Amino acid sequence: MAKNVNQLIEPQEPEQEVKEPKPEKRQRFLGKVILDVLGGDFLAYDWARRQINYVFFLAALALLYIANSYYAEDMSRSIDDTNREIKELHYEYISSKSELMHQTKQSEIAKKLEKTGLKESVEPVKKLIRVKEDTK
Image 1: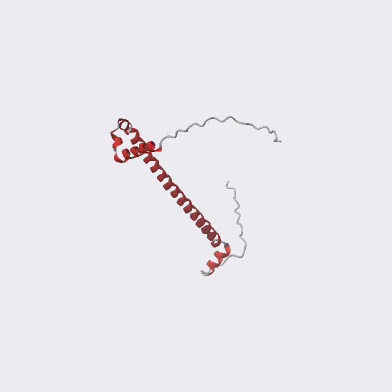
Image 2 (image 1 turned 120 degrees about the vertical axis):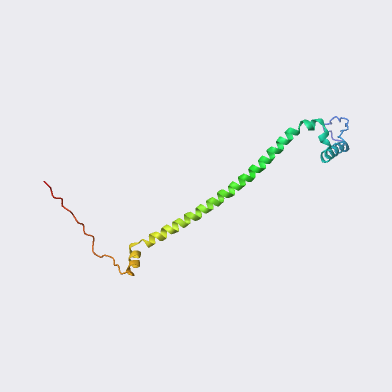
């Protein structure tokens, strides 16, 4: 005995042919456009003559954009060079200041003046007080 199994049978639709665009026609059109552009024939068309001002405007904008990017790169390099120079000058300032602080110490000055015959005073400083007299 065969088993009775419920099976879903889908109605089959007749297959329709899918029409694809002919690649040859498209290739011929693109080939014609490319040949027109390379040969300069597209300039003879009326729509191209009407759009020539717009094309020149876009070309001018492209040149300005390129010039602006070169200018920005140049400014960026200049800023980097200036920052590097500032750092070097700051380091030079710090080292010069440190050297000056070392040379102006009392002991260093005393060593330098010892060769000339001047000696450091060992007595403390005395304060002189002047008394004002009343003049009448």
